Length: 170
View (cartoon, rainbow, N blue to C red):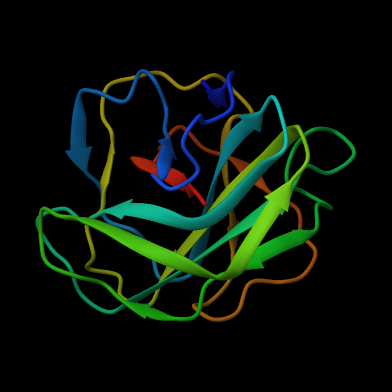
């Protein structure tokens, strides 16, 4: 399942949020602080994005960093280029949506991109898509300690755990 927007927002003053359509049921999932999680999004027209929304679960601790990668040669994030990332941001209150601003807005051409997440604390439990079986190749991970995301996405491992996340258009 990819996140897809098919018509341009009509009111540029009101932020729009792009998110997976089949995102429920949801459950908490503990994020490892030595792993970056990635989820595919697909834009069908040029879109300006200024933030990623993170859904906090039952435990909120430490910091989070998010980013957006372009797709690599095989439509996976591996080899893709980091388009933007956030600063290290304190994770907010439990059971809340948290808007994490990117370093600056980025206008992305139509195509496939990957939302990347990493946390500093191994006890954080963001909300994830629960019992939904994500198609192979739409969610993946790579191992890295918490910190700045690499400018080129390294080799990835397929995953079946997808965080409940979305992006905000500027």
